Image 1 (cartoon, rainbow, N blue to C red):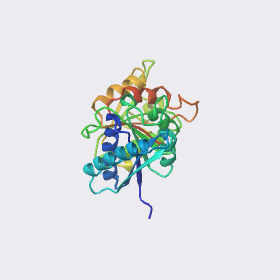
Image 2: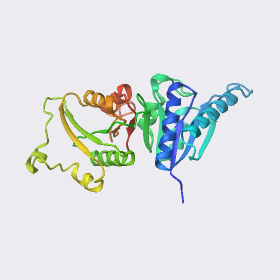
Image 3: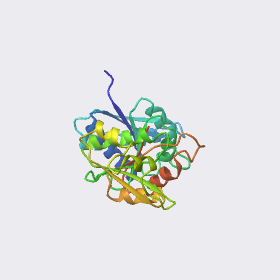
Image 4: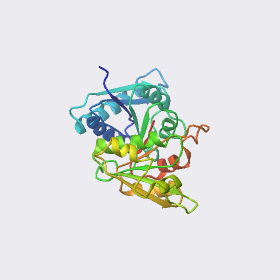
Length: 264
């Protein structure tokens, strides 16, 4: 039987350290194994880069085992660029975890954000660990719209809330000032919600609160993240490199005060 696997990138920076600790707790929660990866450049025949990367991995594995002593943890240091290495490793994982890009990038990444690249291109779901990464007392927040991937994102949010025994806050925000229920929801009645009710039936243990707000969706969700333990968004199906997360996902990766899950 194949074990569930979580992959996390490490480089010794504060952001990566927070990501390792979060990933270890998540692996314990999911009863998954954890792989800690770092990348380095071998610029000369010596072993300086290899030794430094090995030290980073050793420290990260020690931290992970301290957080989750019952979890199988393995650390690997590989030469090359961080983003391709993590993307390849994520092909066999249920979750890829990286740290806040503002706190430094992984070794071998020349420019830009490893977090942004893997969030855009990974086949697995990605968590970018930000803000209050150790606060598990707040709700799980999910942005709800009428797009083609809405059901998938809502379902994942319910799963995360159930796993954490947390309340789920489903937020629909519109920048045109009409933050109100859709015509379909209004036609069915105030107590019915065609988007959420099927998931409420599937996850009766999850308390799901619904909010309609007026304002830019990215700003509204950033505000709701101030008290949340996790926010769930989805990638766009169409777009070109650099904007595939859309304004909402990109805004959350820059400003959210809690970990951001890009659900796939």
